[in-house]
Amino acid sequence: MNNGLKRQKVGVFGIVGMIYAMTAAGAYGIEDMVSSSGPGMTLIMLLVLPLVWAFPIALASCEMGSAIPDECGFYRWVQRALGEFWGFQIGWLKNIGIYINVAVFVVLATDYLASYMGFNHLTSYICKVVIIAVFTWINLRGVKDVAIVSTIISAAILVAFAGIAVIGFLNMSHNPFEPVVATGQTVVGSVGSSIAIGMWMYAGYESMSSLAGEVEDPQIIPKGIIIALPLVIGTYVLPTLASVGAIGQWANWGSDGVSYVDVAVKYAPVFGVAFMMVAFISNISLFNVYLASGARGFFVMAEDNLAPKVLAKTDKKHGVPYVAILSLAVVSLILCMFKFDILVTIVSLFNMGLYSLIMISQIVLRRKEPDLPRPYKIKLGKTGTDIFCAIPILVAFIALYINGTDYFVLGLLGMITGPIAYIIFKKVYGGLYKNDPLKYPINKKTKLAVGDTKRIAIAFTILGLLMLIGRIFLPGYDDPAYYAEFYGKNGIFDIFMMVVLIAGVACLIAAIIFAGIYKKLDTKEQGNA
Image 1 (cartoon, rainbow, N blue to C red):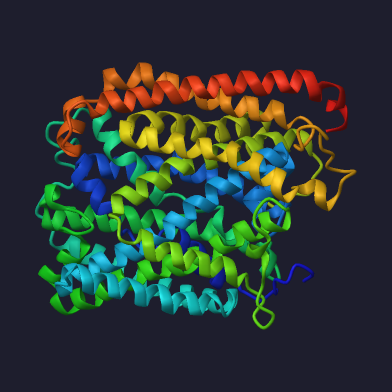
Image 2: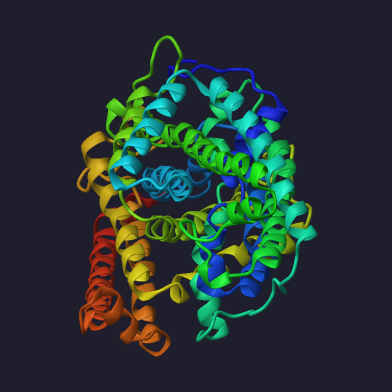
């Protein structure tokens, strides 16, 4: 391939193994949902989220992936539907999210091992370093080796969780739906306590598209998604239902507390040891595949002159973006010192913006390129597909406000970096204009693509309005006393609200400024955009 990447033959089972590893690799992480929102609400969320979140995202990814089977597909889908600026936004959100995400899996893997082996903090960190080093080496060898490792591990995970489900159902002594809502919580509060983790558990169906350019037949990726999705749902619902019913203690569940491992250890000790090891390697598998897909994000953006060119360097022997892989490994060494739930919530908030852009692109591409060949197509008609794709956007909007004020602030401040980063990278590296000046003209005065000032104004308007809505809604929804206790500082909630107000107003002012620049400098050239 002229970009330095090497195509490798990967079969359907290998694709399914990688997708399963990217989207699930077991039910690990759900334990934190059980204790934070209640066992009943956890099971309800696990059954509802596939309908309003996972299915629309997965099927839209299938359709656009079959029509545009390019490396880092999600980035190309949005870029083709909405243009360079919005393509950069999804690339930025996804890539920054992955830099955090890869550390999540190392933390989860080590938490399981540490809880069983009694590791101290130093031993746990050494274990994390070893994991990162070994699987960085595997990734440097190419996507085929990643697929082989993922398929073997995914098969072991499915067997292990099937075993847990059987053991749990044979020993049920508790009603797994009681209580529905965690003690002291409202229904809305219970949903808010678990929705970020639940959305994270059912995310990742677009990630395999990051490797489409390195698979000989990328059209098998949509087939892999269709096969993997029911496996993911079954892996989450059945073992959780059986395990909570067998062991109870819902309030003590957590990635570093009571978990599926305890069910195995209590009722089948020999199997319990094997299951603990599967828990360990499953999260390593997630780290393995996300290290692979994540490295391709900035690689493709660097090819478009929207990221440092060093990230586009490939190894001549194996044809992999080794600089990007190593950069992910280094960041993982730093972030793996943080707790699981903190990292997951940050990633989930980025995912809300990311998946909203994917669903909007699906709607736009149906109108913009109706004759584009789509080997896989959502068969719901024009209106039905629009509604189907709008549902996850609505879910993301609701989740943004009920997940917690501190994460709301952190998530939106993180999203603000997208337009700012685009302005900087476009000016420094040139963007698509540098590849094809005639096709992607720029405004000579702003050095941005023609019409970008309007798009930036729209982005800042959306962010500003989201923040001001939060400023109005959150004081009546959230409990300031909780934040004072959690952070050990009185008035912290008021500080959050002040940050939201200032950032919201700043975004709207920026929107007005860029709208003015568009009217003054871009209007005449808009027809060439």
